[in-house]
Each structure stands twice: as C-alpha cells, then as structure tokens.
Image 1 (cartoon, rainbow, N blue to C red):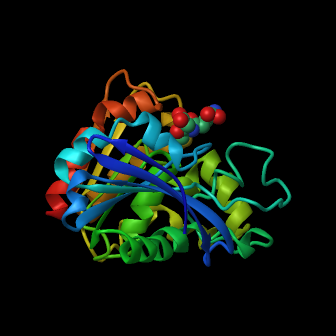
Image 2: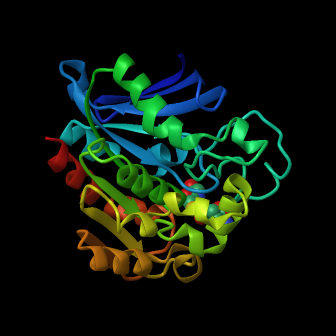
Length: 276
Ligand SMILES: N[C@@H](CCC(=O)N[C@@H](CS)C(=O)NCC(=O)O)C(=O)O
C-alpha cells in the first residue's frame, strides 16, 4: 500500500492509500478515517459507498462526518466507485456507466468482466486489507448514497452476518426497474434480466436469510426520486416480507451532500449502537 496523504481531523487521521487490487486487477484508491481512539485500541469500521461521479474523496470533503466519528470511536472506509486505468468502449463517455459508476456488482459481460468486480472488492478484498493493516476490529457496518446506497443494501442483504448494521441515503432501491440500473446492468450483466435480480435490494428482500433492519433517509425534493430511486418499491417488499425498515422522507431535501451532511450523525449513531 502506498500512502497518498495523511490529514489530521478532529483528533484522528484521514489517510488515503493506493494499492494493487486483485479483484479489479489494477490500482485502487481508498480513504480511511481513524478516530483518536484508534491510537490506543481497535475500533469498528463503517464502510461508505459513494454514488455516481464520485471518488473516495467526496464523502471526506462534504459529509461532515468526522466530528461524530471521532466522538463515537468509529473508523470510516471510503473506496473509489469503480476500477480505473482501463479504456473500454463507452467507459468514459457518460456519468452513469463505466468509470465512477461501477454499481458494486461483478460484471459478467466482456470487457468489463475482466476488471469491474466492485462487489468482490468491497465485500471481500477491502475488509481483508483494512483488518490486516489498521487498528480495527472485525465488526463492520455499511452505508452509502444513491448508487452507493444500492451497493450498501445489496452487500448487507447478500452477506448475512458480515455487517452489524446497514443504512442508506437516497439509494437506487430497485435498480432493475429504473434507467440508471437498466443501463448499468445491461452493460455489466447482459441482456438476460434474470441475472440482474441478485443485484437488486428490492428483489433480495423476500428471501433474505437475515432480517437486518434497513435505515434509510430520502429527500422529498430529490430530482431523482421518482424516476431513479423508487424507495416505495423497497418499502413494499419489506412490508410483504416482514423485513424491518425505517424509511424517513425528509421534506425539502435534495440529492446532494448537503442532505447527507444534515443527517449523517443519525446514521453514525445508528451504526455505533449496532457495533458496540
Ligand atoms: N448529473 C449529476 C448526477 C450525479 C450525482 O448526482 N451524483 C451524486 C451521487 S448519485 C453525487 O454524490 N455527486 C457528487 C457530489 O455531489 O459530490 C452529476 O453529474 O453530478
């Protein structure tokens, strides 16, 4: 691992690293915030998955999370949102596919299937790396925004026991049924829509073997709410299956990091309770 930067914040340290990833067969960058408590003890970890157009840096710079993380003794790990360094057809042409839009799946369509394995990276490789190299416990939680909210939900639903808690801001809750998800899943997973189902939180709910409560904030003034995000589909699936969900509809809030910053403390407290 190569240390890219180290910045003190609220008594802890925000560190950015580059490392060679086996899952995506190339260099990846991630950030880790280590709270002050990590100087003397191992701390639990919250994984944060960002949305379309983001890198590992958006959350660190805009969410305003580190004051509360320092208070709670919570490490936060922020991966990048896609593999980098390749030049596949259509990879860099649009904001919602290819680079910065990995959708946290394992691609099966060439050439993306060679490297776009963000699911394996986030669920397996990154926790392994983090737990081997930093003063952290093996207690993990996961959260994210938009594409990353979708990512957090599917990672938790597909891996019972791996995460102590899960939350999301404005997640793409039913990606098999919205333009962002249809475009990404066609490109990464192919035309056979039956292969998409295992990557859709709403469709995973019915057969989830662990009823880990979902905690979700959604801005009511979010421009993407009706066409892309569809939290009502996830809510209906949860009601049908008896899966616990808290879906808070926040009047006036949009899709931006101003919305995330307004409610991030509630999410950190939610995770800290589950992790302690
Ligand atoms: N058209 C917008 C859509 C992308 C968007 O809203 N991205 C969200 C996540 S889905 C985001 O976090 N953008 C980066 C930021 O606000 O820092 C853009 O190109 O920025």
